[in-house]
Length: 164
Ligand code: PNS
Image 1 (tube, protein in one colour):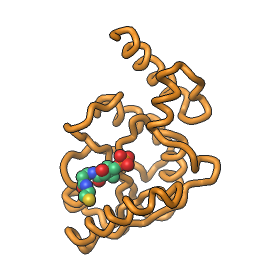
Image 2 (tube, rainbow, N blue to C red):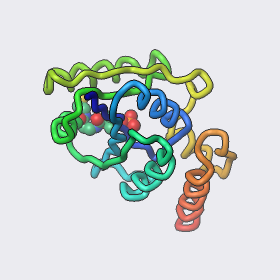
Image 3 (cartoon, rainbow, N blue to C red):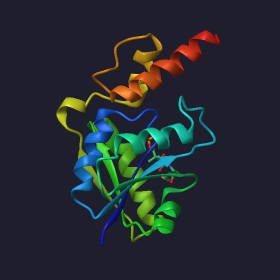
Image 4 (spheres, protein in one colour):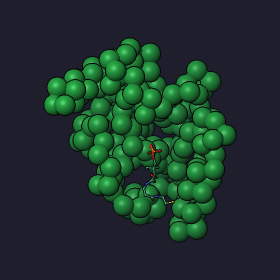
């Protein structure tokens, strides 16, 4: 039985993330989408909002579940009995950081391997950061993220602009 974690901030979830989730879920028995609850950062969406949106967009993937975690990924892997971490690689620029993270995690928890999936070419340019940037200036984000998520992003950005 292979249980894997696909960890990330997912602020917000993009079509690139969904593509990785769909492909990874076909390779393992169970895939847990691990949403980082990072006290140090101020995300656009609260942890509860991100978990709810991820549950909604993965509802049709039977072996995919969504959980939040805080602290070290290796501790979350131990708690959930997971032995694989899934990460997407978009470009060579992602590689250095991802390699460092994978090696550090494996040093701390040798039973944990990281499996890299190359992002589908159509999403190779996509990131949550650029989606937030485009949305902040009220650009069209419908081709980057699921419709319901896009509506939520636009609502958040409007709130943000209105409080300035
Ligand atoms: O979507 P992101 O922001 O690229 O995801 C990064 C994430 C959540 C995978 C990474 O920051 C993480 O695992 N954070 C938890 C703390 C930890 O275990 N760090 C790795 C030690 S090198």
